[in-house]
Amino acid sequence: MTSLTKDFFIGLSNNRLLNANAKKWGFRLGAEKFVAGTTMESVIDTLKELNSRGISGTLDNLGEFVSDKSEASLAKTEIIRILEKINEYNLDCHVSVKLTQLGLDIDQEFCIGNMKEILDTADAYNIFINIDMEKYIHYSKTLEILKNLRNEYKNVGTVIQSYLYRAEKDLKQLRDVRLRLVKGAYKESDEVAFYSKEEIDRNFIKLAKNRLLGDAFTSIATHDHNIIEELKGFVKKNNISKDKFEFQMLYGFRTEMHDELAEEGYNFCTYIPFGDDWFGYFMRRLAERPQNMNLVVKDIIYGKNNKIKKEPIILGTLAVTSVLVWKKKRNKKDKVIS
Ligand SMILES: Cc1cc2nc3c(=O)[nH]c(=O)nc-3n(C[C@H](O)[C@H](O)[C@H](O)COP(=O)(O)OP(=O)(O)OC[C@H]3O[C@@H](n4cnc5c(N)ncnc54)[C@H](O)[C@@H]3O)c2cc1C
Image (tube, rainbow, N blue to C red; front, side, top):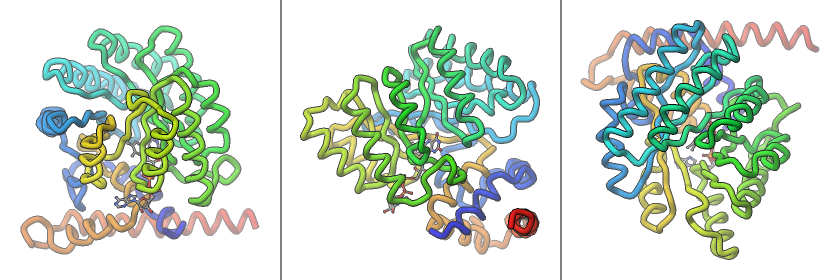
């Protein structure tokens, strides 16, 4: 994948106007393949079905660009309602949250307060809460908040990204904490992150092996069959109990592997995003894997009823315009730097 393609989709994922418009239009561009539904009610059956196949879930109520306290409070209330539904339907499922959705960029203490309310409910129902890791600008704050929360709650963990140079050092500090290990989804500077796929993969394998030899539970989150095979071999060779880890993949990605791994007796968890704020999430998935673009093209040309629709065309026009503006800005910046 060229870095330009990645930049393009990451640029779109960060575009507030596109995110806001996509919210109004409901699922478009084939997003329903990767986003399970728009409401909690619409994903309960999906979860029941996964559970019946021996697969657990982690629910992510999508939300981007929370800019005031009332939006963050709404997100908190919705997450608490999700926890109540998980308990009511006895679902094998935990919840993933983003601190920016709960007000991290507005007021850190307010964000911690929201997390505590969520953790009180989750604790009462014995549900684990995982804090997704976002862009690097939020990284230190996320770890600081996690440390603060863990003084009171044990049912909370976070995510470590193997593209970060500091990941290994941070994992040492977090050796007792349940964590998810990922490669990392955002575009970061080479001052803080490995850039080449080889280095990121190598670090992922190294960190996963270190975690597997330790005591705390690890979610190994990747669609990379080579890494999964290598780690399966490592687990076997070192007699590591399957109770100490799970594999995680995103909803709609490599679905056949979800079942294969569960049938082989590994704990498997599907990450299930839902909600009407799907655009940024979907664009980040395209950034990782441009092959998913064929869904977008099909939807733009044909739509569901083989009719050309106006919303995707407007969306496409806005996308192209925003990329042109972004490129222009970048050129200007490059000129200033050089
Ligand atoms: C459950 C889960 C939670 C995540 N949470 C976070 C988070 O909190 N923060 C964050 O920054 N990132 C998160 N991510 C994203 C993650 O950081 C990576 O960007 C993403 O998983 C892509 O890396 P990969 O290891 O899956 O595979 P890649 O490195 O993209 O691909 C490796 C190889 O796997 C194969 N492959 C990959 N995908 C497919 C496919 N769909 N079909 C066929 N073959 C495929 C191909 O051979 C490919 O060359 C999460 C990912 C998962 C799975």
